[in-house]
Image (cartoon, rainbow, N blue to C red; front, side):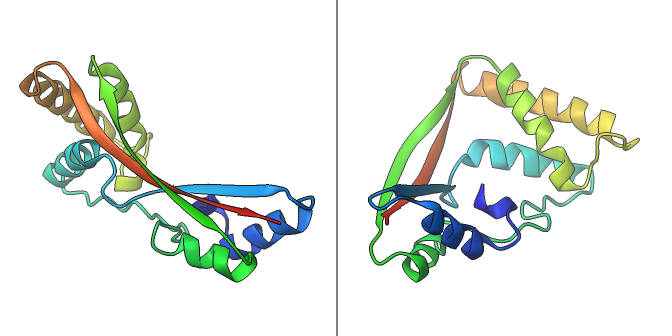
Length: 150
């Protein structure tokens, strides 16, 4: 969750400082192409209601492109492991629950008067797409893990 830290490089330096000799530190971040189906449905519903999704929402950008370089500044050696898999859902409710948590990033806070119609449309659109997929939602999930030792 380094993208929640005001100074990610400082956090990585602190992790190295507190490691014992031989201790290992790992950090993971999603690749840009992760969860395209979820990202598309949330963006489409937000756009239909005049909102624009802002995933970074004031967070420091830590991603698969720059995390290895941050490790290089702090550690003499590091390994990058790429993991590609998928999130597989056999019912729409977990997808809906997760997507509802993303609405605030789209500028629709929970207390907003506009929230209820956006939630209703998001629910309906996910159920429609889920049915179109034949009752199995398979969303590619990819991330990297950077690992380094002291």
